[in-house]
Image 1 (cartoon, rainbow, N blue to C red):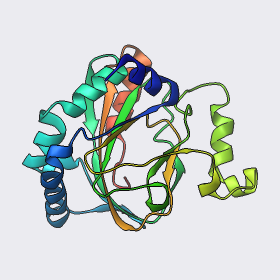
Image 2: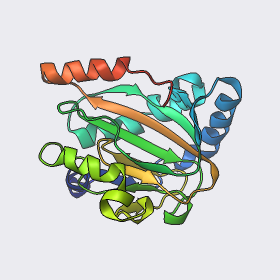
Image 3: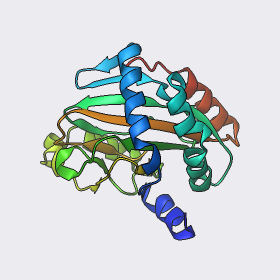
Image 4: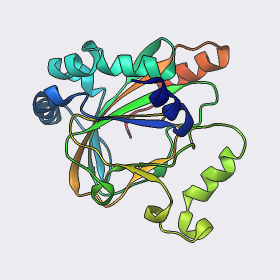
Length: 221
């Protein structure tokens, strides 16, 4: 990873890393299906998942955590030591509307996503609104606008200006989960694996937010 790529991540809130996991795609895909056959799924309509999927398979434990590729990405982009705080395997059916993963003010997180099917803008690729990982200022007003873009902005959710990260199996998409993100137009049974890391907290506020994050109910994913 170059210094320019790290700066891009810090500026826009995401970075697309191509082909990082190419060599393990078949094994990861098979392990994903094995976990979904043998562990209970939770979630909601259009989104069924298995929490902490990496710990439920020796293959995934090795490919996602022990191999150190994903942890190394997290350390480089967050610029400090990190702790693994979980990850999910999810099978999507339909759209994932605009949202952010929490509203932490001090805790710094990095989510690494990999999809097991090729995706583009029209088939459910991850969309991110660049720069929305930044906190403070007009954050809350922006959140209200995206809750109902049709009423507040006169736009359908899929018309909101955003960057669609076209990806292939083996790619990693690293992003700050406080960024606004969504997907639209995808078919059913789109498979996604995530691993999430937190920068080692340096303040009491960050430590409290990390504790709350770890204790949060994940049954709805």
